[in-house]
Amino acid sequence: MKPHSPLLACAFTLLVCAGASAQESTSVFNFLTLPSSAHATALGGKNISLIDDDASLTFQNPALLASVSSDMLNLNFLTYMKGCNAGSASYVRMAGERGTWGVNAQFVSYGSMTETLETGEILGTTNALDVAISGLYSYNLSDRWAAGATGKLIYSSYAGYTSFAMGVDLGLNYYDEEHDFSFSTVAANLGGQLKAFGDVHERLPFDLRVGFTKRVAHTPLRVSVTMTDFTRWSQKYFYNAEKNPSFGRILMNHFNLGLDIVPVQTVYVAVGYNFRRAYEMKAAGSSHAAGLTLGAGLNLKKFKLGVAYAKYHVSTPSLSVSLGYIL
Image (cartoon, rainbow, N blue to C red):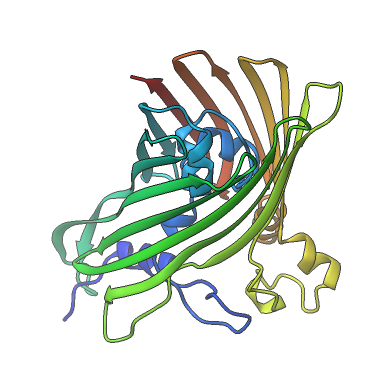
């Protein structure tokens, strides 16, 4: 008999989701959709327009690389589902007057699990791992416009099944410093598998996003709105807890809202709400803090610290911690 393991159920969950079109399909490497930034996590999990001296935000939008200090090193750690941990690292350096380059790496480890036969006979232990290594470059097109691109090498191994892929993120940002207004658009996870898990090549979790961040005049408040999944408008894409969800319900599930309170330049407190995550988790039986995210951070001249709370699974909350240092 072929080996059977609970890990395969975890792998199957990660492999199956909606594809990058209005019609249903499957995608792989969905760990790429996890936030690798405590600040982005606190603002609902997806934020492509926040202008801050934070290298971890470049995972969300490579165009934001232009606003990060040269020689910044960032580390991020996320406690995911029980037994699963995720982490990332970033380094940024200026290249001339208008260019900036960087390197990113991220991983998700799902821990060790017992591998058994269908009869229950124990064969030993097995594990699963996702890894992505990226190179980034951004260029200031003008005083207000910046463009960026990320090239990714992606690898996954689930209980002996492996896959390798290449992907690209393309980002554009407009920033009006005088009015503290930022607008961005991102095409994330363009590309595909070079080596599939089996005979069928599957899609990367492509996502087309737009968003803006605006400080409310004469207040310490900064509002962010991000709209995701522009290529997925079928009601079947979302968790089918309702037989006939309204257009309003489908529309709201594309929104991610965030609010920063910045009493002084070096401190922020953030709260966010992810409509889709709230909808799906409530449908799965979890109503406590579903979709809600919280966080706070410290931005000193050379040292950056961010912590955030979010919930991605009904069984346990997640904690994200980001550390940044300018070398």
